Length: 94
Length: 485
Image (cartoon, rainbow over all chains, first blue to last red; front, side, top):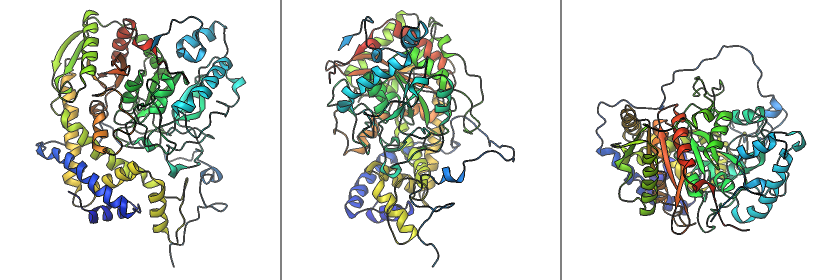
């Protein structure tokens, strides 16, 4: 089960501000979903390896060489706040 | 509903291969196709809402005069198109104009075809099974406007079904191509994981996502696969193997093809009309010479819980990039952390927040082993079920969804019930295998029913042989909704 305090804690980890009403609704719904997910506890997975990809793939490496990349103006084109060459964010260090 | 007879039909009602024949013989131009689509979109979309941002008045493509010999393709709102809004139907990507094209878009451009500037509606970030979670409002099912088109690629499926598009691209993480295809009576294919590049597809769950075609018939599906499939160095999960000409497998025949019917899919909860339509389809395929046998996919009942751990965990990580800094919406706040929290709190929709929080929870300290790691292990068992079944099978046939389309609003407040509508499609994503939904009948109320054909990794060709043989012997794909705007 999952209580309101846990949802609040996890929402903070996920950097999402929730309203009081959202917290109440989510706690109930996540509780139901986790209750359903608990079904997995009945499966014996003692000697089963985990699968993170259905097709086995290895590391894909490329040559460490210069190639064309997105120009600065294009990379910044969607930013809500920017100056000539950087993203602008609220002050981080006092 | 009515069967179209092929005489004097409007161009927007034709398939891509019919239009390509007409283009080749010089009877029509690509511009004629654009005009027919434009007219249809303007009259039908105010009712269907398959396209987003209310762009129905805009030209469908730039430089239309330069496009010759091509049939335009509709694109889901999560596939990047350089210069044209791509917002995943989320407020958090409001105004996002991609600075580059997805690989599939590059391939379309290189193929001589074109794509529509208007993008198709979807559940926000592909989180949903009904296209009701879109920041642009919901899409209606052209077969009955009171019903959902399925989701998350509901806009693409509804556009193709209502002849507002000739063919379309969707994406499928747990059934998001196949389930709406079945609800809307069209063909939808989720290719093998690694078959089609996801470069430029806005990521939901990276170990599951695939881009695929939604089309009016099987031949169009094969033609569109020929355009989009193939290795891409920009997607490190794409697999470098030969891509066959899929149209060549259409006529390979199905005599002696070994097909499995998983008993776990024909159980309580399956709608009786869906059950009998799929069984009838199996009878037709038997008469055409395919061999059937019952198989067991033991861990089927665990697919949905496994999926909602893995998919939400991956989504919570993928969606961390939406922080108000690089693109989209930003909320005002005095410090950086508050800016992140307010931006994400205000601009993500309800289902997106639910999934990000669930995903963060199952990955968090103290719960990782109990939920996430356990889910990865059960995923292994689900995949092994298929590996074992395919040792002596060519294909597996199931219903695509346990029910036909449901009513708008019916499941929005019950996330768990919504999640269960993907119960038959999710396993293919977990196992990485290809799956197609193909029209196989209608309910008494006139809603389409789809059957699903699954095959081994990279064996889309078997799916095409089987689906084409079925289609040649049935008329379902020729049915059109009576929908009049």
